[in-house]
Image (cartoon, rainbow, N blue to C red; front, side):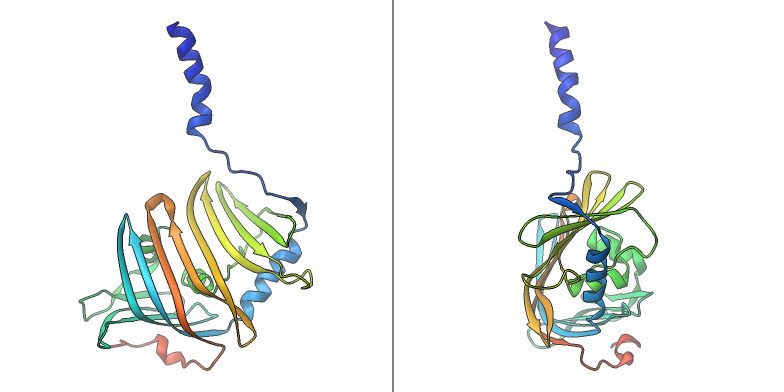
Length: 252
């Protein structure tokens, strides 16, 4: 009896302990047009100046910032300022596309946190350029040749998958009805380490602003580490002038 029970346990363990990444849904298609559509959409967004409400969650602990100014451009340069109810500065984040500086709440000086600081905050390694792209509802396709596949379902829903070693990126793409095949918007992106989901970006509530489809809600999360960043845009200006000096200096 014990032997039979042990054999049954061993047979069921692989199914219980190993979750296989599901295959792409729908009919497999050529990925080229979809990748080109994602790149074309991203390149349309040159600058963003916005006011948003930002919510953070880390292992069940939540915090909200009611007034946050976000300025970014297509070069991966980013400035984020959080303000209190009286207009006082609470925190600031600055990136010139390479280095990342942070002034934490309650501090007066900036500290260099680098790529590692973004990874600790988001739970996944995103470059400043990838973060800017995500905040604008876009993704940056791998810049090196990697295996890529795509599949489409009905109603214009498609998925593009990039694989590199044990890492897999999946981008959910929506093709608006009546639009040509080279048009597509990123609905979300998922990144897997093996079969483990380590990052998800969701781009919701898109609204046409100056002819550009901009997501009014962006959620970046790592379910494995219980980390979540939610950006709820309230005012957005697209492709207006932005002085380069805004991404430089002390920002005191």
